Amino acid sequence: MSTEDKPAYSPGLAGVIAGESAICWVDPNAGLLYRGYDIHELAVKSSYEDIVWLLLHGELPDMAQLGKMTWELSEERTLPAPVLAMLRTLPHDTHPMDALRTGVSMLASFDPELNDNSHAANLRKAIRLIAKVCQLIADGWRIRQGDDPCAAPHDLTHAGAFLFSLNGVLPEAWLVEMLDTVLVLYADHEFNASTFSARVTASTLSDIYSAVTSAIGTLKGPLHGGANEEALGVLEGIGSADRVESWVKERLERKEKIMGFGHRVYKTGDSRVPVMRELARNLGERTGKTHWVPICEKLEEVMTREKNLCANVDLYAAVVFRLMGFPGALNPAIFALSRVAGWCAHVIEQHDHNRLIRPRSLYTGPVARKIKE
Ligand SMILES: CC(=O)SCCNC(=O)CCNC(=O)[C@H](O)C(C)(C)COP(=O)(O)OP(=O)(O)OC[C@H]1O[C@@H](n2cnc3c(N)ncnc32)[C@H](O)[C@@H]1OP(=O)(O)O
Ligand SMILES: O=C([O-])CC(=O)C(=O)O
Image (tube, rainbow, N blue to C red; front, top):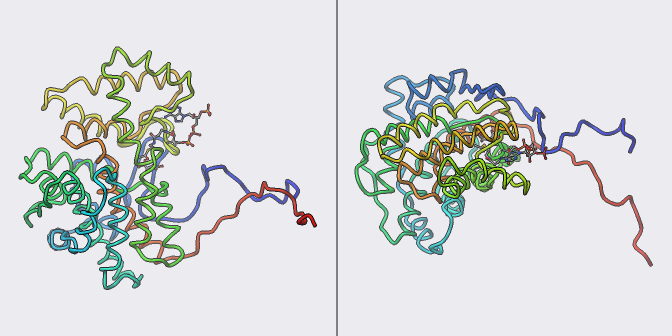
């Protein structure tokens, strides 16, 4: 094949436009819009439920729409008994992302509309998925700790229901509000790896549960959603701001990656970092644990100077989750708790305007040859 015959090729699909979408716009210069609304405005004025409706329907909900959807989410949270039984059979050290992936895959068989990819059926399934992902994470965690699942009262918001189901106590209002903001920030990010894998699965006209199962498997990796768990390990390993400089230099000399830094699209800063940083600062003051943010800030300074790399949302999320009392292993699952709304919106968009996603590879194997006689 001559060079002229080679079609455009970008390793890792970097910079490649792989499809059209009206859901979310990521501005490389630290901007993010959901359906045209700026993330900074949404973080202050909207709830996660508003964002679910916005991503799925294209507009912010009115009071009646919001009330109806909030009720539906609370009604749909309960898991089928066989799914709870499956969670009980998993080894106690199963990672929450593995339990979640298996749980979503299993839930497919219990949805009477599984193979109906119409817009209306997909919207109904999206609500079931968003609700049940919340319960799978919370119940799965409790079961693996030896506790019984704990159903949340119907009048709690999605963030409140998650906290109640996980901890078994009514959460304080400020904590619910903070988790709600985190869920708003994480809800969508155009063609990130997990969303793209959901769209690839959906593009074969497979169902929304299969697509979300693919997405969870993709999110788990440490270069994507797994980074917020890894970032916590980084911060714990460093321990105090005065150790950052030497700690980072050692790792960079060994060509190691520092988790929570770098991004495929953002090169001058992650749109969500300023909000997440302020949440971390606020939580630090509330809990009296003010040493985490200075470690992150020093890391930002050193990584900018040494590698010209900015922090991504997962760095400060690690602090926020830690100060909210979540165990580190739950960090990527909390990302999924939010991002499932984006995945569902993208699957619906893919099904509504489908074309099979099937790129080509650049063949680097041996030239054609014969088996030796
Ligand atoms: C919500 C999210 O999913 S955000 C992403 C979360 N992931 C992480 O935090 C993991 C750490 N970060 C990374 O691995 C990367 O920055 C990614 C995967 C996010 C983006 O990757 P890419 O766009 O492919 O950038 P790429 O990996 O090519 O990096 C370019 C250069 O910067 C370096 N680099 C990128 N990120 C980092 C990092 N976190 N620490 C140290 N060096 C880094 C690479 O080693 C590479 O250096 P080189 O040119 O000397 O080989
Ligand atoms: O967009 C990406 O590549 C990673 C991602 O999901 C995010 O930053 O939220």
